Amino acid sequence: MSSACEGCAKAGNCNEQDTCSKKNGIEKLECNDASKIKCVIGIASGKGGVGKSFVTATLAAKLASAGLSVGIMDADITGPSIPRAFGLKGMLEVGGQDRIQPAVTKKGIKVVSLNLLLEDENSPVIWRGPVLSGLVRQFWTDVEWGMLDVLLIDMPPGTGDIPLTLFQSLPLDGLILVSTPQELVSMIVAKAGNMASMMNVNILGLVENMAYTVCPHCGEKISLFGNDEVLLKEASDAGIKLLDKLPLDPSVTALVDSGNTEKVDVSDLLVNASEAVKALL
Image (cartoon, rainbow, N blue to C red):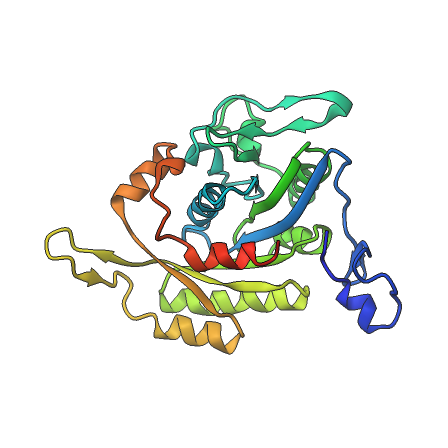
């Protein structure tokens, strides 16, 4: 991994900035020797319901369509939706050395999710924070990811135990924030951005989801949540740049909901976000 050890480098305690396994004074978890991952990107939001998993799934499809090898770690443990977005069912298998084998989509995207470890995907996960955080760590250390250009991590919303575990324990190369244009959400975006900055995680930018919809009759763009000036100002004040604006498109939503994310036309979606990720490779 190429994550720089900014914390100890500034303190003058590290002469191996490119290979150091510590950041913020906390040791990063190591991958197993069967996993070689070039770039790790977190997809985060300050609150639920803004389409973070939708952005994760479509960004993965976008990067895979560009010829990159892509994996998704569904770390939104209590609300895992990534398997359904790709039509994945059944339980993950355990291979040699007790390593978890990811599920693989039709176009080769590797996926690990708690829903693929449950006999019934509708079973509630009633676990305390430390147990959930431990599972997320296992998704990193015990999964045989193989060779990946990019691993996207669908993070749970907010700034609780699991996001903190991910920030502290995994070598994140970048973070993409997801939000809708509502005024209330703008404040939460700033909070999430500030948390990432405190953890010395590079924020690649903001994806504004459900920014508008297009009238099927006249083609007019309709802002469902009103003007996004407050959101963009909060993001700008926090040093977060806008990457992409995504429309609310019922046809795209239907494809994702039916497990056909890889059939979505991603040519005009997440253009800047995908370029920001590719620039890290």
